[in-house]
Length: 134
Image (cartoon, rainbow, N blue to C red; front, side, top):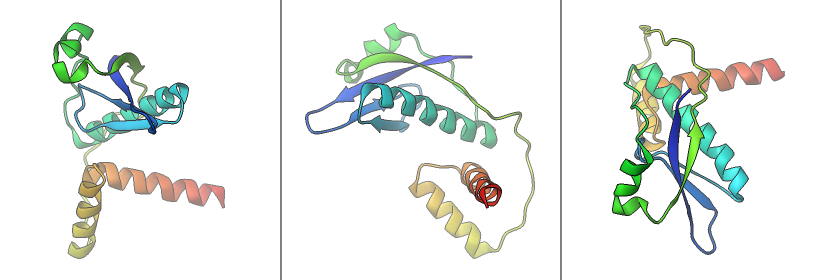
């Protein structure tokens, strides 16, 4: 299991935000430090699972020295965030969808920082969970 550096940022009147230098654009927040740490683990795992589903390479964790050498990172407090993925090996599949549905999926996924595969996996899990709960 790898540990990645998360940077906690806090401004007056805001929650504790967490960003990941190794994964630009992945951010989360929590009302308390403990909640921010938990949310950081979930956000990191979710993002990496999407990368795995897309066949993207997962970067090696940067060292603390490398992260803190960047001036923009020095205003954050560094924490180690464990990468706990639940994804087994990803399998490439071929599916057929109506063109308008595919455009809608792609637009939604892009607007929400997801890949097409990540969105479809998330939607499938949500639908299965909803069915199991019924």
